[in-house]
Amino acid sequence: MDDIRSIVASVSERMDELERKREGSIAASRSIIRLTKRAIHSIHTGDEHERLLNDAVSEYRSLLTEIRTEPEILFSGPVSDAMMELAEACILSSIVLGKEVPSYDPLGITPQSWAMGLADCLGEMRRMLLARLMCNDLDLAKSIFDRMESVCDQVLSFDVPDAILPIRRKQDIARSVMERTRTDIANAMIMKMK
Image: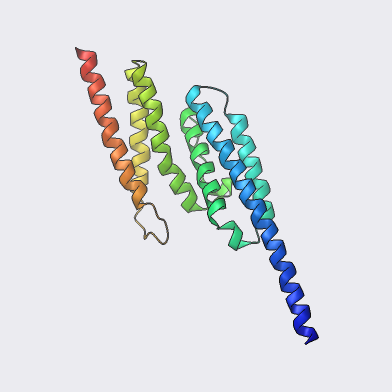
C-alpha cells in the first residue's frame, strides 16, 4: 500500500502544479485581452497603440513559456481567447499601418486563433470606416472598404469542418458586415452627389 500512497502523493503534487498554472493562465489571459482591447481602442482614436500591443505580445510569450508543456491549459478556453484577441489586434495594427500582416507562427498562436482573429478584424475595420463616413471622408472610407473586401475574401476562403476551425458563424457575420458596409458606402456616395 505504500506504493499507492507515494503515487497518490505524486499525482496530488502534479494536480496542484496544474491548478496553479491554470489559475495563472486565466489571469494572464485576462491581462492580455485587456491590453489588446486597449490597443484596438487606441487604433480607433489615433493614439499610440504599439506599446500596448508589444506589452500584450510580451505577456503572451511569458504565458506561453509557463504553459508550453501543458496542452490541457495551452488549448483551454481562456488561452484560446487571448490568442484570438492577440491575433485580431496584431492583424488590425498591421493593416492600419500598412505593414506586413504577421503569421500565426511568429506570434506563437494556433492557426485557428489566427483565422478567427482575422475574421474579427472586419468588425473593427467597419467601425473605422463608419468614423470616416461621419467625417465626410468618403475617399478614405472607400479605401478601408477595399481592404475589408480583401480580408473578407480570405475569411470566406476557409472551408473546413467546425471541429477543425469553428469559423462558419464568423463567415456569416462577415457577409452581413460587408453587405451593411456596402450599403453605407453607397448611401454616402448618393448623399455626396446631391
